[in-house]
Length: 260
Picture (spheres, rainbow, N blue to C red):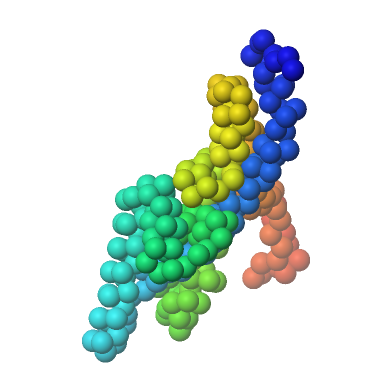
């Protein structure tokens, strides 16, 4: 069997031999990144809402103490998972769970769990920042008409906060696409792991990782563009019409934000 003698010849050879392997690895990477980001957002959302709870002035001491204890535990969770590498977290959760808790989780389930918990710690601070960015007067107005903390968050604060932090959420998704490569330490067959296996069979590491780099670049570039389109959709139209007023219910005003 004759082998290629040029760089691009080897690239074509490896794509022909391991094209489906690279494709499966890419699918696994996308699945983990997307699922981990969605679950991480949900975790971060719940943590952020919990950390913004302020007991009423007349609340019993035990309730205030319980809220403060919960906030303390959530702060520890955030600091631990933001302050340690995902690779170390993967080793501790996967192998530690097997050794001490006797939990033999499938590798895919472990990977999604690890990425979700890690992303949740970052999302919690991102969402908390988005919540803080909303005008406090709106929160006070909601409380003055008897809305609970949860109702205020769901109806008034979060719709505005989520739009403000959309770029950061998209950035976390892109980061997860790249950081999923560290999960090869628990033998997950994602993109990096499959590329490393293909490189080892023929000793062509440069060509194999060149292919992997191109795939990662295409993934992150495509995701970034799609997220920007989503942001524009959430912004709504620049031109809109307001109908009716207190003095004339049939009047209308056309607003152009670009000219304003």
